[in-house]
Image (cartoon, rainbow, N blue to C red; front, side):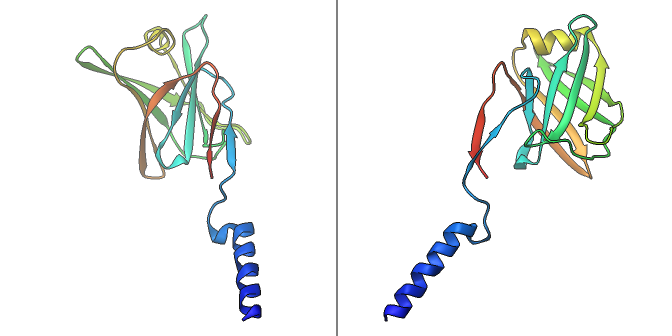
Length: 152
C-alpha cells in the first residue's frame, strides 16, 4: 500500500511538472511594438498592429503571431472595416512583401483611414485577413499602453 501511495505522489508530481501534455499556465506578457492599434485574431494564433505616419497619412499593418513574433504568411491584403453611421466602409491595405525575420507588412496611403483609426471612431471597427484558406476577423483595439497577460 505504501508503494502505491508513493507511486501516486510521484505520478502527480511528474504531471504537475510537465502539465500532462497540456499547455502550462504561466502568464505570458504580450507587448506590442507600436502601442497604437491592436487586432488579436480568434484562436490566439495571429495578431496585427496598425500604425501610421502622421505626416503622410500612410497606414501600416504588421501581421505577427500572438506573441508579436514575425510569421511567414502568403497574404496579399488585409481589410480594415468601419461602420460609419449606417454605412460600411472598407479600406484595403496591400502587402509590401516580407523580409526574413520581419513581420508581414501591409500599407495604404489614406488620410481618411488614418484619421478614423487614430482620432477615434464610433461603432464597429474590424480587421480581416485570409491566411492559408482560413478567414480571420477581429475588432480593432485602441492602445496607448498594453499589458496583456493570460495563461498559455
